[in-house]
Length: 484
Image (cartoon, rainbow, N blue to C red; front, side):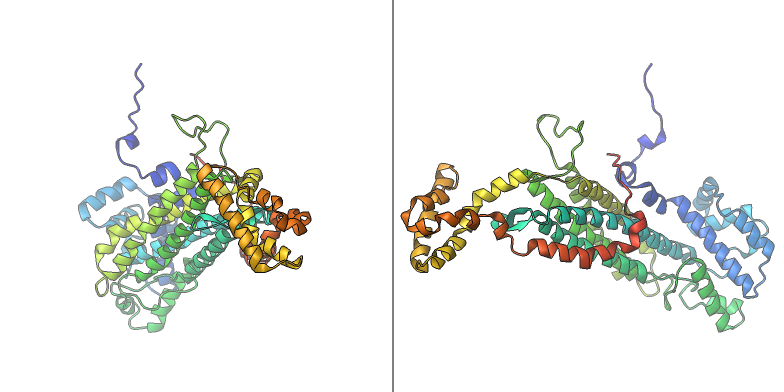
């Protein structure tokens, strides 16, 4: 028989962010079910607060709404929306259909943004709460790596040309410092989020002032009570119809900034993989290339770079959206935000999970690293050789000239003849350097070229990195299994 799979999902475009990569929890955070059950919770909070403040809302109406908070008839809502061309009223009608007693008071005094914007703020907050422990895990794994290799000398690179030595762990601290900035940025963006609350159609709370017959205190109490029920400490004091779209810039700019960090880290790993100094984890069965069986490609780092680029590009959306909101609001924010807000969080989620997987299994090849050092070390050691000669009674200028001539000869062998760097052999063969030949091994020990790198690593990890991880202790040991 012919294998036929008529499943509808294969007949239409699905975002790879969800179908291929994203975690269940982040995919759920921006799902229709979460969105519309949150709308219903917000209608319940509003009814409860209105009842507590003396409006004609009964216990029975609130109880009826609560008993139907989760059972959403999505087909009915879609049908209502096709008739009404209004997503919020479609869901008001759908909710009212299963709550006949509460129907007259659902959405009382509210505007669409009461559910729409407040739900978005809840999703943004919950999105940060999903990302922060993941970022903490990446920082934890990389900290362990930095600690383990704090003293392993490696060639530094400036301009991607060999430079003075650093250590493998110290280089990882450059990555960690950026991630620590991202951690503080995400924490701040999350803490700065406020609730839109109960503000009415143009932000003046006029409908609620009318409901409460001019009692300003009750309008303020209503705003505060609903804000607290939704789990926020504060609401924005002033809004137009919507909360300021600058809030979206604030959230997404920190995600884009984290994208830049992760792109840099993964690019560094890709460059080091080419040198065979460091590799991302590679499964036993994994195939690197359909044509070249020996290939071990840094595909996870490449995926991170690919998605980080999208995360950075998405920042243009909220910047432009905020800039074109006229007066109290225009609706040209809506379709854009449906894409840019979830995609930013989904993309950030995926690259953090992938980076956790990478940092849990980074492979280091000390022998390759050492070979690269020994290839360049003779040139780097020239300054130390000069100092040793001067200590032994030599003249700095004479010594400098001798070394310069021998270095040029050695460079010719390396560049024109493809040979190894033979500067040391030339130094050993020149009687001028006889006074220091006994000290050459010490002068050329890579550990004498790494400065304070190990001490910097130890202090940085203990003073700046580990304290950042404290709030996430309970979630730090979760492992990531990558689907793909």
